[in-house]
Amino acid sequence: LHAPRTPHAAMADWTDCLDFGISLAKQASEAVLTAFNRQKEVKLKSSPADLVTETDQRVEKMLISAIRKRYPQHRFIGEESVAAGEPLELTDRPTWIIDPIDGTVNFVHRFPFVAISIAFTVNKQTEFGIVYSCVEDKLFHAQRGRGAFLNGEPLHVSGQEDISRCVVVTEIGAERDDLALSTLTSNIFRLLKLPVHGVRALGTAAVDMCQVATGGADAYYHIGMHCWDIAASAIIVKEAGGVVTDTDEFDMMSRRVIAASSSSVANRISQVVRAFPCRRDCGGAPGANGGAAL
Ligand SMILES: Nc1ncnc2c1ncn2[C@@H]1O[C@H](CO)[C@@H](O)[C@H]1OP(=O)(O)O
Ligand SMILES: [Mg+2]
Ligand SMILES: [Mg+2]
Image (cartoon, rainbow, N blue to C red):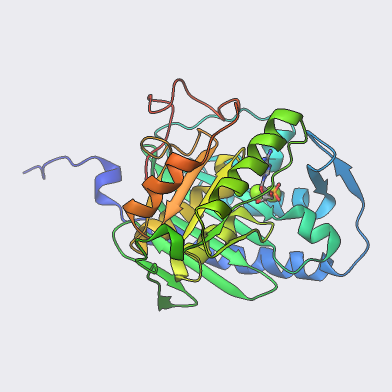
């Protein structure tokens, strides 16, 4: 007798991978903290504000080689691998999306918010996300359909629906051209005029977005970041009861995101904030097959 065939991905719950990812994030955090107070050699990437250090590269290599050893069939999208010329391609295969240090400018300056961000997708759907805020020693994680947690305690968004009572987090990013800078500053101007209670930026997209999951902030938006900056924190916000959108449906490759405590706050931010053009990380038109869903 033959049991009915169920696709492998539908059967698996990927908890094994999640546990392994958490143990690796802890190891990676030790490496980041050891280097944190030392003098760093800094190289530039796409702009004078887009930095990389030897630690970013070493931590990413350590993570990928450990995962590859245990799961030889799995694929990777890593910030520093892509910077070194690896293709950025999301397929249906199990894929680890890694930012070895989110907040490299903070790391270089010893501004105490840096994180390791690890997301895992199957069939382009995120199964879990891990964000380890190293200096704070805060481990955020979420698994699809199973809630979001900070150091093991359940997380919930604030539920705030009134934009004028919101703390909104965003990032300044690495772009320094006139169009990007004027769009960015006028977005902040328009939000402050609504008014909102405050606008904040911690310097790490992953940790910023986790603030929405804790209820410490009510919304987050960012234009220009990459999939590895937000893939893990997006599922953490969603599992904490938040809303994660683009101008339309969330697409982690679109380089735009709004995460909010409620759909009314998300809609209000999408009415106020304008995007500047960014080349997609991968895939076709927004929402097309090459994108990725939560
Ligand atoms: N081109 C870009 N535009 C906007 N944000 C970017 C960016 N590249 C990276 N980021 C991310 O935005 C935050 C800082 O503004 C960080 O999370 C940073 O990630 P990183 O430190 O891994 O490079
Ligand atoms: Mg990053
Ligand atoms: Mg990084």
